[in-house]
Image (cartoon, rainbow over all chains, first blue to last red; front, top):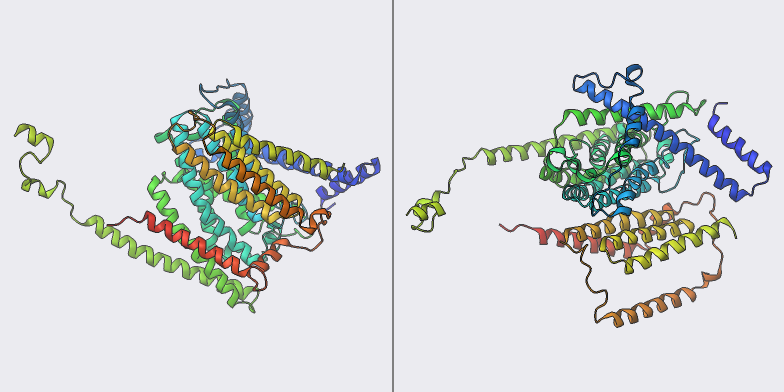
Length: 409
Length: 169
């Protein structure tokens, strides 16, 4: 009774065995059922996310948000879905049809694939593979391919520019993301996501706060949300890679983006906020789903908070921020965490966490000192008087100056 | 036939078909996309062989990095995607020769390997290939020297890239 989903699974398994299916086929049917249940659950949640997102952005912008269809506008997302489905499906002239139609599907599937390794409860996880963390990185790469396919197949300059920006941004921010993912792997001594959750008696956000911050920042960059929404910047490249998509194909991109934000939230909570951990989970494992989604939605709220209060970052600043700040910081954090961990081989539990936290605070302090000296140097450079015109103009011989001078002289 | 065998035949057919389309498709972007399908098929073979780490690394390195870099390079090259040139040049005979010799050599090496006729070992309980691999990479009895050599090579490439990109004042 305390673990209904596992009981249902066992019941179906017994039913299949008593009906006389072979063991291989039983495993296949059960796996397919599990996939179906997880995907349906996540996609239905996705419809709800449209409402959550619109309602919260409205609050940030001092509006009411959807409030006409149903109580509190709750049926609005259903109306949105109907609208998207009955819209005309346009394919631009000169588009590469197969690639164009395949791209939104792959974009959504790449997000759904991540849920295969997210543990919902101590007993309920899609696939507890020994390389779970690396799997998340691999699946992220497939999402990038989908965006490039969309940008290229649309036969549109803005879409292509969006795809270029995507490669520059996602591939760059993958590096600090992967290094930050390595820190919980190092602390838990395993790459299995379930194993990382099981090892978090004390949440890793206490043990490794800097890595958590790096993961959140590069995660926001990976999903391309403000301040990193250069790949679909409306004022510069209209809508970027999905400019030519209409109807449900655009809907798939939109659903994929919303779900990706929640997925980053779920990943962050799994790796740094203890995943399904919470009171009474030992007696009632089913509560784990509840705790996981509370944490995931909290991080999702943080991402929305950042999205709707910050302006877009400039493209050179975006790359500089990654290569000159985030990546070096991530490497330093990983190295120092590894060394401290080795030094603290005989210290365990509370003392270990306190020292790790202290080391992290030290890293932040030194980073701030370096940043401050850098910014004061930059200010001096900017503050120096710069002549508006070229000083040497008066010394040039007639005819060598600007075209206007030579024409009048 | 077991489910394993059916899956193996399906994946092998898809991988080989995609590989064939890489070299026959007229459009360079399509060739790159078929290459992704083919590389993905190879990563499924690693899964069949219980080499989860290699399967995931295959996707990270080949699809996440190399294929994307290729597509990026093709897209940056002006008009190369819509004006296919001649499909053969004068060196095609050498290409065929080298491919056949390479294929023959690899087949010969694999067929002379004693494990070729054995059956695939099942997944052993409490066996963590990742941990074994990690220990093997840094243990002096196993692969520490190749591992360090590869690291030095990558570091040299990294420094080289920085020097090439360095803006001289």
